[in-house]
Length: 155
View 1: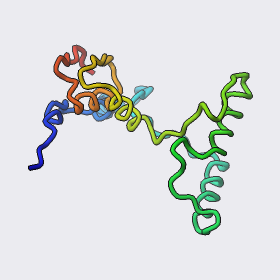
View 2: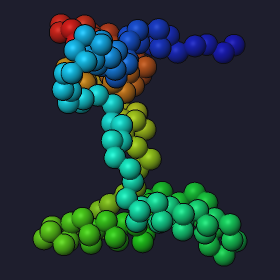
View 3: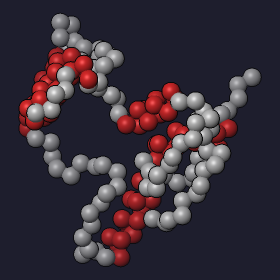
């Protein structure tokens, strides 16, 4: 018989970024001329540069031809991309990083979960406040919430 992971029942009922968004909207309504520096979820605020959209168009058009089609990339990421990152983001600034030291991830949410999956369930995990919500949630879902202390601050 299939059983549910009961640790999911321990998840908190709110999502930090939803709370931040609601508070920002309330503030805007109360203070329509107020200035806000929003440190909530990372949303774009400016249009993409033309070089970026052109590169995206080129990459998409390569997917139309069998000779240039790319499916799933290698587990560490495409070599040409890792080389470019090493050169442009590190080596040009005098930092000795090679492509072998770089891997292309599919994002922080997956990484938080994957890294915690490596650890035994009885490890103690520190949860800072504030916390990236997925870090807290993935540890709760894994069953590491036996001694979870509730937040003391209210946003």
